[in-house]
Image (cartoon, rainbow, N blue to C red; front, side, top):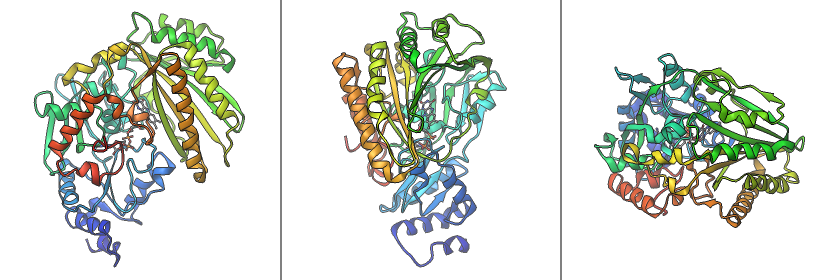
Length: 483
Ligand SMILES: Cc1cc2nc3c(=O)[nH]c(=O)nc-3n(C[C@H](O)[C@H](O)[C@H](O)COP(=O)(O)OP(=O)(O)OC[C@H]3O[C@@H](n4cnc5c(N)ncnc54)[C@H](O)[C@@H]3O)c2cc1C
């Protein structure tokens, strides 16, 4: 133990005291700058903004009990601030890392198991989706989760979670049947449709506001191979691609096996746009009718092939760069997609920063076949409903290297989204919903869930965390008490 305490030296800030207290109980589960485990966690952050923060110590628990002990300590020291880290794909600074505080790295809680009749998969909250799919593929099973395997299970699910299976089973969170979590008091509880049902609903969309989730049990279903890959078109065909997207996303009988993302990427280095659609069919059908119009458009590549989920999810990680995510939700219209492209192009084309920047925009259908699952298993907090009709979620992303340009990128992206919202509003297609997992800190996704959901979330927070440990001591993420 002494070698751990030695790292504290003679400095004594509140976070030093907090780390010293944690180390005295959790021993080697607490690491300090210079330790290899500390470095490994720091190197695992997805964005440069997050990797640039330096926690005073990092707790790497192995069990829910370890977390319970850690929370009992940190919640008893009011000045102790902490961050909860899964697989760190939320890019904004401070969402899962912290300066002058404690980072709790959940990634050792990564077990995956299924019950005897293969209807429920129990997943450690620190698992990645690749951990899950590799295990479940071998059993001919799946659960609704992230499309990129490197993303974390808890982070994605606590925000909703868009999966390839969404048109069949709803948001990923709609498929959670139980959350095990550690409350601010240190108590370990299960939240499900019959036990702590308000907390259960709050967790489905409420982010890191209620506790540290240690395990999620998901409804599992039989799943074989699927069709997946990209259809790439020259940017000059965007109008036809937007038409094909809109046709699929508004079909009166939406094909629930179809899941697609149409994405455009602009590089300031080449001043060129590229256009591709990730088209998935969650059945082993090589040429499903739903994609036939899309595939009739002249293509520069078409990689659709029959594969499995873990192969598709196993994407190569990009280099460490600054990332900004912004989001909006809109009624589906090919004309709107074209106008979004034109609006972005106007700003982006002449936006220059040292080292360059790459922008991308992705369009993801949110049809009523997805939102109709919002009431299942005790309901969710997202406020998305079939009443809103067939919408799509936009993810606008900026990726750049030069940190001194962060504020300028942020301001520019904000303006781009305001412009897009203005266009959508003028066409009667602006929807209030902001998907929390794609939202920038300047946006208000929790407010977008609607008054009733916000009130319920606040009430649950006051009931389970009356001192506001997850509001005041966990500064990262979208908070409730400010609403
Ligand atoms: C490359 C990439 C691909 C993506 N693909 C998808 C996709 O297919 N579908 C989709 O819906 N979203 C997707 N996202 C968005 C993703 O859902 C969010 O970024 C999500 O928050 C990431 O979770 P994480 O554990 O990886 O991240 P982290 O940054 O570690 O965590 C995100 C938030 O969740 C909190 N949190 C994490 N674990 C816990 C826990 N155990 N208990 C309490 N709070 C916790 C953290 O405090 C943090 O605020 C993608 C993002 C990226 C960068």
